[in-house]
Image 1 (spheres, rainbow, N blue to C red):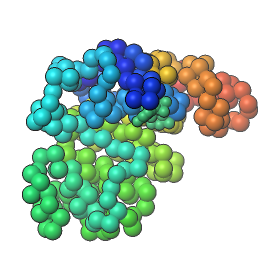
Image 2 (image 1 turned 135 degrees about the vertical axis):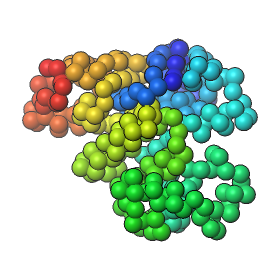
Image 3 (image 1 turned 30 degrees about the vertical axis):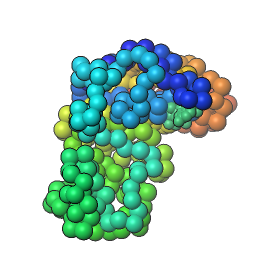
Image 4 (image 1 turned 90 degrees about the horizontal axis):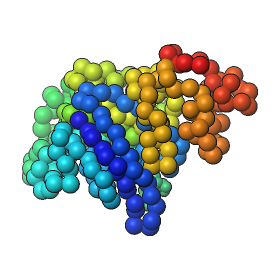
Length: 274
Ligand SMILES: Nc1ncnc2c1ncn2[C@@H]1O[C@H](COP(=O)(O)OP(=O)(O)OP(=O)(O)O)[C@@H](O)[C@H]1O
Ligand SMILES: [Mg+2]
C-alpha cells in the first residue's frame, strides 16, 4: 500500500519534522504510531494522505511514485484515503446527514454537492453508515448538539461513505473518555477488518496501541525508532521513545501502580513482554 524511502519534511521555518523516514505498509495492515509530541506523526499522516509533499525522499502509493501525480490522478488517489482527525472537522451547524454525505465530495461535482445541501442525496446511504457506527437515530440531529464521542462517530460514518482503501486516524480518541476511546478504536478496527481497509492510527495512549494493534511504530525525532509487534515492545523501549518528554512519561506511569520508576510501574498489558 505504502512505501516510504528516506522521506524528509522540512517546513519553511526550518523545522525538520521528518528526518529520513523509511517504512512499508501492506494492504489491509493495521498499524499504530506512538511517540512524543512533535515527533512527526501528524506530518507523516499529512504526507500519507497526500496533502503535504515530502521535501525529499520517495513515497509510493500502490506502487505509484506520488511525486508523478497531479490533477485528476492526484484527486483520485486522495479519495482512496480517508482521514479522521482529533477535532473531527465537522460543520457543527449542519445536520448529521450533511456531514456524513460530505464523504462523497471527492466523487461529486460541485453542483451536485451544493444541491445536496438543499436536499440530501443518498440519504439511505447516510442512514446505513450511521447505523454501522451505532447512532442511527441521529440522522437529522444538529451536529453541534451531539456529544464528542457521537461527533467522532459521525466522522467515522463520513469515512464509511467515502469508502477509501486506507483509513488514517490521527489521535481520533484524545478528546473522549477512556471507555469511549476503546469503543471508537475497536469500531475503526472492526470496520477496517470487514471491508479489508488498511488502518493507520496515531495514538497518545500506548495502552490502546499495544492492546488493539498487531504492529507498533515508535516515532521519535522524525524517524522510525522501532517497528515491532506489541509483545516485543518493552518498558525500556517506551522509556527511550519518550525520553525527555516528562509530561507524557507521567501519563504512561499513570497506567501502572503509581511508583515513580516508569519501567517498573508499567502494568503488564495483554501480550506485553516484560
Ligand atoms: N506547518 C508547520 N510549520 C512549521 N513547523 C511545523 C508545521 N507542522 C509541524 N511542524 C513541526 O514539525 C514537528 C513535528 O510536528 P507534528 O505535528 O508532526 O508532531 P506530532 O508527532 O504529530 O506531535 P503531537 O503528538 O503533539 O500531535 C514539530 O516540531 C512541529 O513544530
Ligand atoms: Mg500530531
